[in-house]
Image (cartoon, rainbow, N blue to C red; front, side):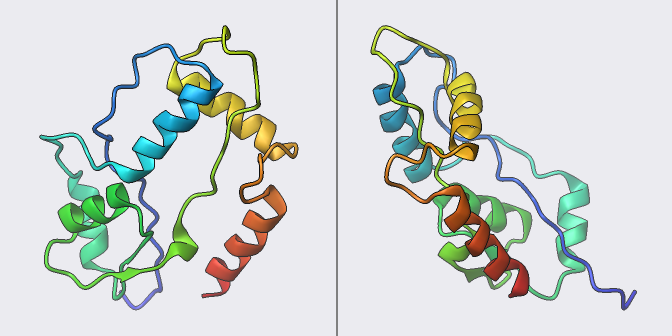
Length: 139
């Protein structure tokens, strides 16, 4: 059909252990590895995503390795527009004492909530991310 369509896909499962107990500073290190790392082996792209991307004229990816690998698996051989405009906002954890341990998934929840309310620890703030998201939507 000629109806314009935007497909938004999340990356595949990263090749990083998420079943560990870590403190806030260790979570910062874990997240840096998460951003630098690729996908876990043996994943299969859902057929619906492959078909949806075949109907798209343009495929855009963030600059992160996991996003690039996902795009390459979901749309092999297709040209990508790669732009840091589409990188997810950084979500640093709140500065909590070292004896407080959580799994990365829970740190992610805490980090997202506290970032929403202003904890950005010198990284991109919510307001800055909203402006960047507006630029991405206008693009």
